[in-house]
Image 1 (cartoon, rainbow, N blue to C red):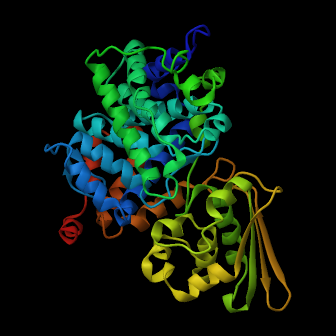
Image 2 (cartoon, one colour):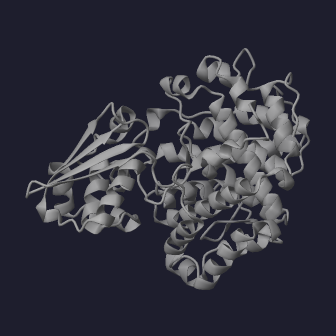
Length: 462
């Protein structure tokens, strides 16, 4: 997919997204896109257990009174309402994907509007696959062009800022935009970009994701109406994304090897709920509890070394309030995994995180520190036992990263586990089959029908 090197960054990315075809996607890229879609669906059905999900559901239902779009694991809402709610469901319980280079969750912004438009217009699984690829690639490439350390130093949070561009790209792909219309959609997406880490520690950081999905949907639908917008939003001198958010950024990085190397393959997945940068801790602990029969009564001290950035975000929750803080707590993750030899949403229910034994263990026996010897999501865990022995593990690459990926079977098990009680067994099997052969699946409308809640689950929720 040749590109004109002299075209402005926004326009080059628009040309890429508008012209991307299934045949241009390498096989491993197609399969990773399927993994991303399936993982997003697994997170969404789990998201019905989120503490704030009911609040977002009420808000989403108030956006419009139509009911043309399906809620994953739910009923029907308007196009805007379903996009917003599905985006929140994917991120609600803190176990969706992340593009580690930009610390940005991607699928909550990309998958919901793509599903909504593909369902509405009766489009095929192959068209959905291409749209998700376009959206994920645009988001991650705009992200690496930001110069993330400079972007983060200013306090910005990626999903609500770069996510709208990818959502617009996915919708524009499904609507058949040409490059000029796609560039205008990006201009409209950028005009809605926002979100900072002032929201950290509150559910608002998750609202950034679903609002990014809705912003991108609105941008594309408005561009479809030939609404005038800048074609050069990323590099505009006065208020362009790279100049306003990152002191110029690195625009060349956004388009380097565009169409030849797919940055979306760097999007990592999470097997366990809990924060992104403590997935290395979870990986190291999982290795230890798998190899050793650890009696927590014999544990004298658990010493955890995290990177400075991970410690600053997650080392301060020795004591935690409710589910969201437990999901952010390195102390609690260690206590829960050692006691239960598992880390699922069951460990983040009140009867577990409020268990006095677990609270005491997390506060008194788990020591978390910052260590210059680890970076990013890496972690070192040392478990000192009463007999003087020490069990140790170091994680270089968290499970789910591109260097240590989840298998399709593990993602399927994640979907099966969290779909119980939401979808019927037959629905689960059909959804898994549909995603596996998505390029040959006839209608996304049929897929969304499969993803609506089973009648008994709907009755229980009422």
